Image (cartoon, rainbow, N blue to C red; front, top):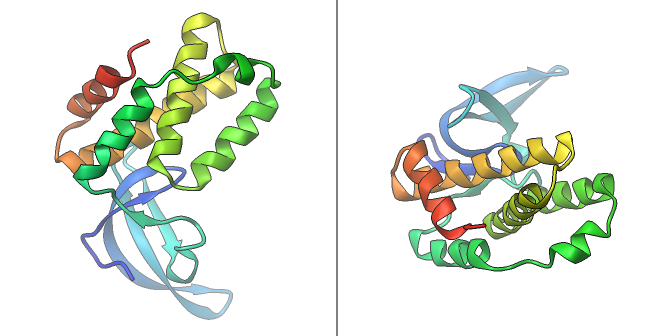
Length: 162
């Protein structure tokens, strides 16, 4: 169970701080919720405590695990194989990977989309996903390294050279 003040990642939104744990009425039943303050968009998200694990809420990674993220960002993914899949099918595959909550999967998708964007115009949905994956990576890095958004972004592009 998480506690107020914990640094966590909510897969579809990125890094957050648990600001509160509160009870809310849901169809006449009192349920506990984690109230997350997201690092971007001044957004708060309420996640039912009972569903937190299923929804992928997790602690941020340890700083020692950043080397795995940098390796993924430095790698050269097979974008030719990716290009052979229709953009809407790719989008669904990417979303399924992001929902796992794995920072290395998010980094892999970010790298692929960055390469595709550099080679040609990508769909609006993929461009939005590129932005979202960058924010997910950036927000977790901000929490892991205790840095601001600009510093985290520079770290990402240091390794994801295209």
